Amino acid sequence: MPTHRVPHSSDARGVTPQQVLARSGPRLQLEIRALRRDWAGSPVTVWALIDTGAAESCIDEALAGTLGLKLIDWSGMTGIGGPAEHPVYMAELRAPALAWSLKDRLYGVRIDGEPPVILGRDFLASCVLIYDGPGGSITICA
Amino acid sequence: MAKPLEQEIGTFERERARLEREHGGKFALVKGDGVVATFDTFANAATEGLRLFGDEPFMIREVGAPAPRLSVGTLYGHRHADPSRTP
Image (cartoon, rainbow over all chains, first blue to last red; front, side):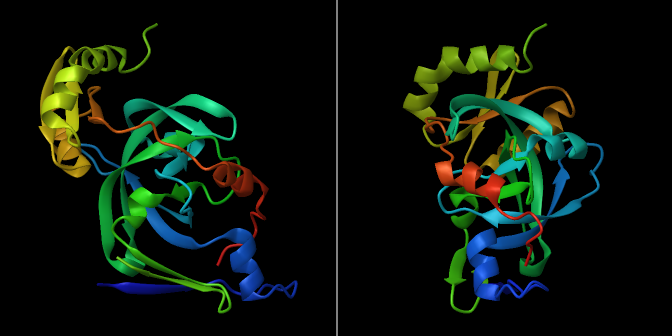
């Protein structure tokens, strides 16, 4: 099972790795691209926030548009603003560090910031995630 | 102007009871007014949808799945995190 450790580094402002991890949350670098029959979209590399509180993985709608992700459904979803209908896209997700890739659904939401992707428990269903708060790092096995 | 996938959503709703009775937990591939097939995984449904229909509209929906929930913390905390902080 490939294992990848993501250290959350100190920054120039003297913030410790523990503080970076606590403030920014556990993050993993991903490649995302559109799934099409006749062409493969160019992958875009982004940081994704791993959120154990989210059932499903989400992508910022603006990024979904830039990537040309294919719309495959609409779904009611409950978030901070209450229930709302959101587009559902399909995409290929790849974590190069884990030699892991998957064709999956991504729910389109307006994120307004970085990182533009949230990995929910659908992603974690195939992973072991170790959150090392004192060490300021996460380790993922997929 | 019709909403994208409106016809497919109507088809799924019409077939919902039967799908939930016979194909719960599977992924339904829907095109126009017909359910094409159900699949064990989303990836298989996506592959078949692209093979059959290419860039034409088609819908894939998990049969019997509850509406997804985003935690309040997800978007609130996400929007208020320091965007400059990456590992």
